[in-house]
Figure 1 (tube, helix red, strand yellow):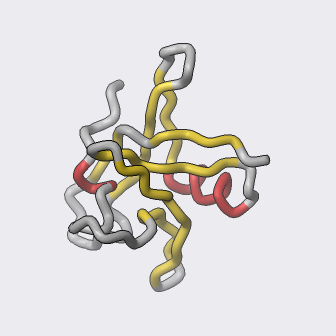
Figure 2: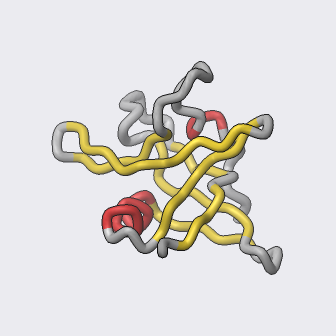
Length: 96
C-alpha cells in the first residue's frame, strides 16, 4: 500500500510556463518535521506507486498526479469542481 503525504507548500519560479513553474513541494511529517522534495522525485514516487500525494483546502482533499507536457514531467491536481482545478500554484512557499 502506498504511503500518503499532504502537500502544503510549493517552491515556484517566475517562469510563464505553468508546467515548469513549480520546482519543489513540501509538507509536514506526523512528527512535526518538515519535508521537501523536487518535482522530479515526486513524479518518480507517484509513478512507482510508493507514494500518493494530495492537497487539502477548506476541508476538501484533492489527489495529485503526474503528467507530461512536451516531454516535461510535472505534477497537477486531479480535476474536481473547485476552480481553479489546480491549487498547487496557490500554496505558500516551502520554508527553508
